[in-house]
Amino acid sequence: MPRILVIEDESAIRRVLVKILSEESDTYQLEEAEDGLKGLEAVKNNDYDLVLCDIKMPKMDGVEVLEAARKIKPETPFIMISGHGDLDTAVNTMRIGAFDYISKPPDLNRLLTTVRNALDRKELVVENKILKKKVSKNYEMIGESEEITIIKDMIEKVAPTDARVLITGANGTGKELVAHWLHEKSQRSAAPFIEVNCAAIPSELIESELFGHVKGAFTSAVKDRAGKFEAANKGTIFLDEIGDMSLSAQAKVLRALQESKISRVGSDKDIKVDVRVLAATNKDLKKEIEEGNFREDLYHRLAVILIKVPSLNDRRDDIPLLIEHFAKKIVNEQGIAPKAFSAKAIKLLKSYDWTGNIRELRNVVERLIILGGSEVTEEDVKLFASK
Image (cartoon, rainbow, N blue to C red; front, side):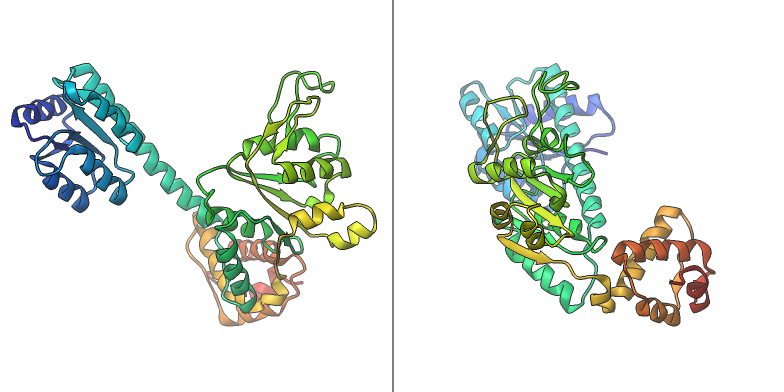
């Protein structure tokens, strides 16, 4: 049920607004405040889906209410109510953060349309916040070992900066988790996070994928297309498995890092981009440089900060926490009853050689959850997860 606060010192106008809104929908929960101070106090102590606020009021005017409310409840939409002489001020309130304004006396259709739009926007903001929390949970970094604690500390220091980061480690260790956390804890977290798996894209298409192309640049280029760098503008691009990128694409990435501009395949026009670059690889890039497969100048551009993600065998103390985390997640996904792992089962799993790292552990936990008994035992591990 949408909760709406009306802040208006003129009782006649206040009654009209409340009457119009109550007739529009019996689901609206309407509350009133007769001046700015009382209105701000109500905003502080309650969660409103919408606030209608007059601009000229005694004690505290609407602009002051809006500015204060934006600091404590930035997601709450405000519709400002303006007299004829307040129109310039009303327009200025939108720069501060008001959703819109309506003039006195309120036009019925304009008022109701603006209220509906503001409530729709609030609903979208809430949904996006919930979705972002869900996305963040998908990329939780689980572990309390010394190795993983060092990485978490590095992320806290590096994330707020725009420093480029090269993440190294074997397949399945969680390099993409580090990249996601660097983005989510950065100043760019509200902007796009664009992932590119360089190993999964054919070498002849990688430049088009990264930088886009113009119509006619090659046989299948039937229209202009923006690339990943443009899509990541103001945000972060994550170049996963960058050790598999072709040398020609490496040259273009180097230019993008040096000059903050790219050009689409088949075009001479430069496009300015503001992108933070994170990269990851399971290869020894210094060895690749020696063999002529990777540009040394690009390596030094990318490796401003180096983060090496340890193998699961190097952080065995985290295995019980990872098992618990995966078990909870899997039973929720599969819609089955929760299952615990016996101490002996966990001890046996800790002793295994996890060549496939965390990715392999998750698969094994899922197999044991599905095939094991009501409690996953040492015998279940020997039977279904033998190495």
